Length: 210
Image 1 (spheres, rainbow, N blue to C red):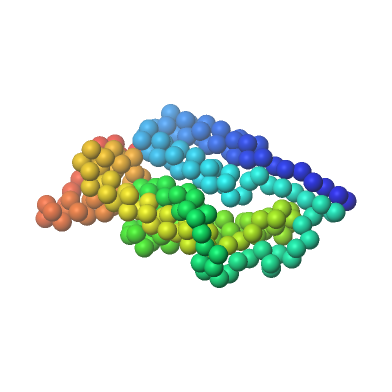
Image 2: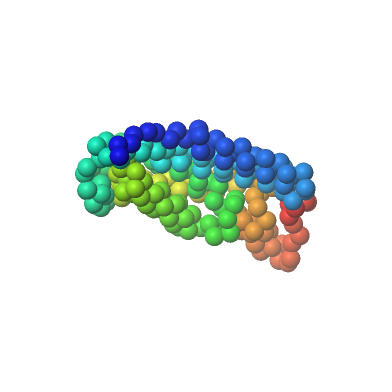
């Protein structure tokens, strides 16, 4: 059986984003999420879709005489920084938004090191998906440890960018208002206010926990 076709990101990621938008609208209408939380989650979903469209899609399915005949073991580049060049820069840039968003979304991104680790784990997941797509679909994608390094660096830069943004009085309020109730960024700010005031502090963002 000889098969060759392509699955474009529009046909998969497009409908998923539409479903997410509808779900977000319902959550806002039910007052389960406030608008700022919804916008933050939407930004994260759009970024995730963009990353998938660049790393996983399009899915080129090839079986039979059209299949890539190279062994899958030859598609893995294990040696760090071997063959590294300027092509790593787009991978760094791609994950800067992830490093920026993680502390606003997750309670685990409590430091630059942890944010970089989270980004690295996401990158490993992407590389594993690329390898699986090669094994199952014969689509010729390779797995490169340099991509993981570049993506992790991007996550670290994103965290540092958020750190500087939170030091700006103009940006701190909107960013903390959008961050999720248990996020690392909001918890760190509460601890800072508690330490500076010498006592307990109430939520500085009215309605933030909705």
